[in-house]
Length: 266
Image (cartoon, rainbow, N blue to C red; front, side):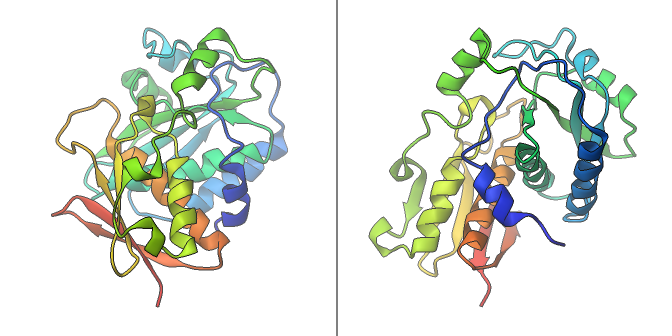
């Protein structure tokens, strides 16, 4: 599978979460291109998939106003669907969905992650899910208005890419002065990953063998947006940074430890 690593890496600092869109038709060619990318992303992991829906997500948000207010004007949306019987389904779902989020930047489109505040019953009326499947996130997308709304200005003070914790606050293990350059780039990229409510609940452990383990802060804490989604997004950001430097690796999953670990290919 040929993921668009170079293009997506360049989109990381450009992408912003937007919640207010203008009435502008998305071209048919764009939908066609995005569906091609979705078809590839849906082959990445078993049990997680994306679905592009060419209609407004407004009915899904009726009566479900989140902490940052309503989403208005989006002409289309992406649904993230996972099989409840698949291990690390939230991580795998976050990984592929963030790939599509970064892909939309190339078309001048904007998106917004919505994992907790949407009407799941209405969503499942619009989107056919199979046995054991559940919709865990809705991502409205379209052309954002030029100027930020008051709600978006407030969000940008505490949102996706603002007021991030420092690397020293998020990383344990091997001291920074002993990191190879690729780890420094990978952690910086991971720190730019969006997280629900900007909770930044991930801990990165740099091991002596230069592997990168991602742990969850307070993994037992119940939240309406699974922390695993945040971890999956950070996984993609790490892999994009590593590939940008001409290296490749694999992710290893430990169900007992509730960790994921990136290791370079030997």
